[in-house]
Length: 114
Length: 114
Image (tube, rainbow over all chains, first blue to last red; front, side, top):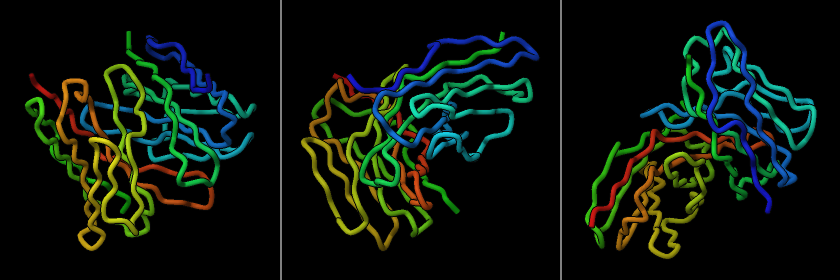
């Protein structure tokens, strides 16, 4: 079945540590996205990528970094510069430029501070 | 400003009742309005969507009503069931030259009681 796989499901970060969240899709979608979800704040866009080897900052990119070396993969690194990383992180993908095609989401990674 | 305001924050409905969630937007450049349903520990999934040239769209027990002049849209869940208990997000698209960027509302936690 086609879909988006996020791993790990739970992740713990120590002070000063960088951690990387994995996102893989087999939907052959061009565009991929990372969102952060906090209680009562909805989903906020961190980074997005429309094509391989290209990505843009979203609304809350500070303290995060991404790469898009392969079409099917869009890993997110939460750096030590992100002072409040505890949140639920969601990866999504969509067919490029087709606004009547929805974004498909993975089941998320919950990141906590040790 | 690219903002979507959603209300109420939480909602309790009796089984068989009608659940109503409202959203309002400011930017008239939005051109597609999806609703997402999210169960605990899962990513959001597209429920139903509407374009601004249509005033109402119905899919089964779910209906979107859209008021373009008031810049408001709402989700109605008829004959609400306990299985509908979830968090619902409204959203809006702006096409920005490729890649559909979603702006989300803050979410409504719906609980349907027996």
